[in-house]
Amino acid sequence: MTPSPTALVCEDEDITALHLKKALTSAGYRVVGEAADGEEAVRLAAEMKPDLILMDINMPRLSGVDAARAITAERMAPIIMVTAYSNEETVNAALEAGAAGYLVKPVTREQLLPAIRIAQVRFNMLMEARAEAASLRDMMESRKLIERAKGILMQRLDLAEQDAFEHLQGLARSTRKPLKATAQDIIAADDQFRAAVGIGKK
Image (cartoon, rainbow, N blue to C red; front, top):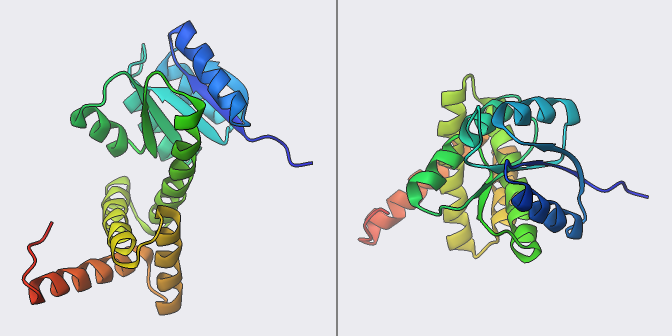
């Protein structure tokens, strides 16, 4: 029998943490740890090695963004940021820190399931980009290029996000090029097409 995937809940408000645990349990996850501050989140992530982390963006001692950055640097697990704010600045800060997704409170099981699937795809993409990159800065640059190329494939081939990423991986393997270089080829080809037909770049 396949064991249940594990999750770490990082939330300093008890009621919110309880809601997150219930949502994870109903989604088939086993909560193996709870962190009430950012430093504890980093420590428990290293100790527990969960399959998924839900991280509040506003945490005591060490912010959720900084904790996510530290966890991502060690390639520990996909992180979904949980926040009461959905403004662009907050979301971008979380994604730049390496988060694979975000949810706005209150979180329900119906929200959680698709967010987990997307987070897993993005985490795998991030880890592949990191394997090719020499530094964190290179990794983030690669991630942005891969995200853009994936978006092009989703639009041009009418693919779901995971299918687009797998198609991108297949192209990289068939051409024996790094994922970043393959993404750059797709972006360049799309730019040429747009210029040829008179469509402005996005």
